[in-house]
Length: 446
Image (cartoon, rainbow, N blue to C red; front, side, top):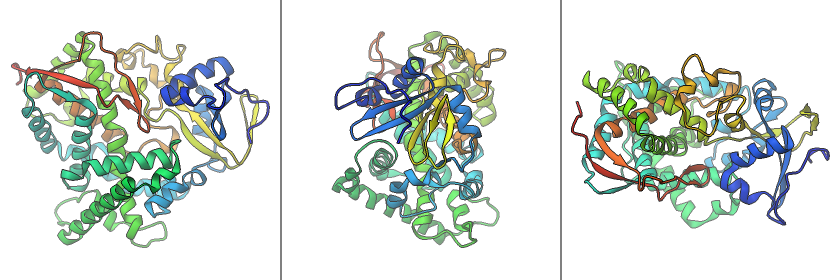
């Protein structure tokens, strides 16, 4: 149980803080940090949650040893649903570091770089299918683009008709396995159908790679790497353990890149001056030929806007941990045996760290400001040794997709004063109804 002296955030009868948490979790946690300090409790039906927030909480997550904070006790549902007790997000040390090192080479920025021409062609083909006046649903479009590119880049496989089952399965798994959605949803027929179809798709990917073999003169993709890898006990990766790792790129492809791409597109379309600066960068880069990783690294305005999107729209702004050993923090004892959340995204909205934190300002990432370089204050991917291992690929993918769309097409928001709503499903993302209008193809495309 939480220590009695930890303050409880005032909430509604029975519901407690449920509505505030589901409507704007980071906003709620930031307000509670200002009102109650860096440790507080929030009540939801059936439980109380202890939340640690602020710069010191982020440093705690970085510095506190694995003996104090663990994941396995709270991610049992993920183990059950994947059928694997080796699934990376559920592991503690030393297993976590072993498997992270094993797969990282094929989930990096360089893995995407090898497939840039194919990815560009796919994005262009999507734009070619748009007509002037057409309303394009942003999250749906970004999901198709990002997941297809991730699948082709890491697993040499086209998604085709599997997209809906991949998204449904992954969102339900995150919602009931990690977030606060009811566990009984994992027993529902719609989820079970999506799960069977997705697992069959993953098995086909494995079978196709085994049948094709890896050419000795080519480096091989992520699935080839898995087929050649060993478990920490030096046994082949097989069965559901293998499928759980084949599944891993799709989790990031569903959860992060599409949502963040949608937010970035929204912010650029509502900022004409910033959009103009980024289009100069894009036109200069495409004038030299197809986009390259080197060219994207030189786009300071697009990169700054991407980073600012990660700051202002933290998709994973609070990280759950199981307290295995009691420790002191913020003048309180955090007792062993409980679930806590470290609200890593709260620092993104503190004005003594980020000047005017609710203003979209890519220049805060430029020198000499570099506001994000203070220790532990920028946490879009987690913190410490458990930061997202495909973060580099994710950033490059977001820049590639949004940059190419804006280079190829003239898009506009539904109205000049349009304000995008965030929808929790099961993690924050742009409203599914958010659509941009196609004005036409750009005439000055190089």
